Amino acid sequence: MFEKKKGNKLLKIIFSSSILTTSFFVIIIICVLMLFNFFGAKITVSTIDDNAEYADEYKSALNNNIKDGYVSLARILYFYLENDTLSFDEIYKLNVNPDTKKMRDIESVCKEDKLKNMTACEESSINENKDFINSTNQYFNFPLNNSYTITSFFNEERIIYGESNRHSGWDFALPAQTKVYSVCKGKIYKKVETQEENIPYDESGNRTGNSLTIECSDDYAEKYYVLYAHLYPHSIKLNVGDEVGHYTEVAEVGTTGYSTGNHLHFQVYDKDWNLIDGMELVDLLVEYDENYNPTGA
Image (cartoon, rainbow, N blue to C red; front, side):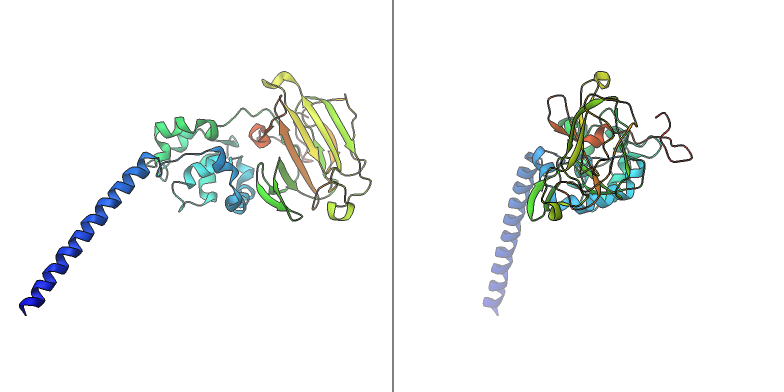
């Protein structure tokens, strides 16, 4: 009897000691994680680059909400990485202004009830991540005026024809021979026509296809270059040196070159030929006439 009680008492001491020891180490681990901002919101180039696991959900959110404006993957991940109970679709809606069709200022977004108490909304976090989460000036119009589906986004990790690929632009799927428009004021910089039939790469074996590059003028704070790829054979309506304005019809959608189906590949470079996210420069607030042509063309 006595021995049993003594044993129970000893077990209690050991058990209590284990709880105290475990609690102590948990506290230490939490402190270390906090020191490294584990619970905070920190977006890096690596975070955005390693995006394969987010690609499908992000494209779904884009296709559900792009009509209300563009929200970058970096802005979505800024909140999602801290609270993954929020869906991409939910975060997207909180970050876009459907009236202006622009991404909202981070300060106004952080007033939303679902977000305001997050570490992401602390001033220090916002300042630390401002290069990734702030919006840019929107100089361009959209290159299409028809309904489309986004099938790839800028910098997306993906596999095409069995090859790993990091996407250099945006892919908008829609029917062959859909009209494509210039997004800026400028001139035709380059024209490539290597394919006579509108067939994809697995049939043509032609990686180059038909493409057009526009050099945007200096009216937009700096010079940009815009590439349209996979264009329909003989649809490019202009030659090198020809001038274009906003909404000038330049070509038609196709599936030439390294393509899997009819779509417009929209790719943008800065003045030094560095790839950038072209959708950050597009103003989606455009008025159309009764024939669904953009006004002010």
